[in-house]
Amino acid sequence: MHVAAPRRRAAAVAAGLSCLVLPLVASGPKAVASPPLAVGTMAAAPYEYLGWGNPQKPTDVMAATGVKWFTLAFILSDGGCNPKWDGSRALTGGSDQSAINAIRGAGGDVVISVGGWSGNKLGEKCSSASALAGAYQKVIDAYHLKALDIDIENTEFSNATVRKRVVDALKIVKTNNPGIVTYVTMGTTPGGPDANGKDLIKKGAAAGLANDGWVIMPFDFGGHSGSMGSATVSALEGLKAAVKSAYGYGDDTAYRHIGVSSMNGKTDEAGETVTTGDFQTILGYAKQHHIARYSFWSVNRDRQCGSGGSGDSCSGVSQAPYAFTKIVVQYTG
Image 1: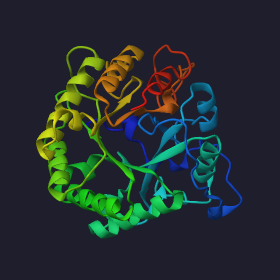
Image 2: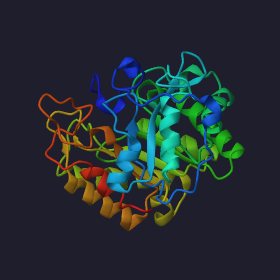
Image 3: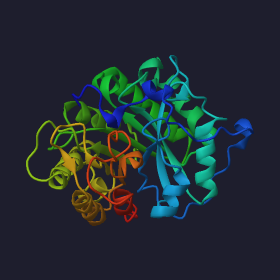
Image 4: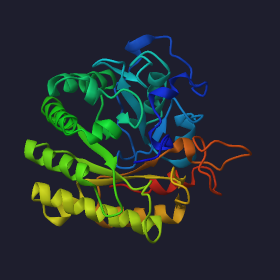
């Protein structure tokens, strides 16, 4: 997690980019639709970032791949304890809401991701667990969410007080929203979560947080052995061990409470590439152990680069359009 400007984590600073092309809706907040029953599974919900990387229309991605769920990034602080898309776009009534309505209209649904690497974090700007839970609740209520992802990175992740605040806030959210699915997504080493990650999981267990998926991002390792697929499996095994130890789960239950969010193609790390073969390795592991989540960063990048193409909007490897999404969508939980 040492790269100066990692593509995985670019967030609020991108709010001024001209790449956001989805139209604004005219009908305002009242246009939020109650989610229909999605045919697919939230266990396979790749990230799309609608404020960055020349985003594709989600409904076009659905038609091309069969994917039904997306994880939409990122909700950040507006400078205080108030959630906005990228910290600047209104929570409802704009292009993000229009995209969500379109996804649901096509039979899909969304997980919304709070956090990322850059920008102002709610976990830091909200001064208490109850206040942070209130900020999360605004997002849940705005979109009648079935699932929420807390992508805890950078200064949120490195601060023990903030880690505890996030865990306690999620405990409140779980109490106030019976049945909601929560994911906590964090970086990792090839051997599993680092000391901060293990502490976060232990804090969750100590608080009695029934988190549905502790999720790692197995890339930007700063060095690893073997393929990225095998390094991911090693990291997931370390995650399973940490969750099993903290919660006292058996192996099967521990596997069902872990997840993976990979990165397709060239990562932020020079010389580090995740191939479709690596994604197939991860898919096999996910199916074998019935893990909670198989996602990746990102749909924006799931296409081959053209001349002078930016790594924010393409994978950097030779591929057919949506080759990585088409693998992930095969996972059904």
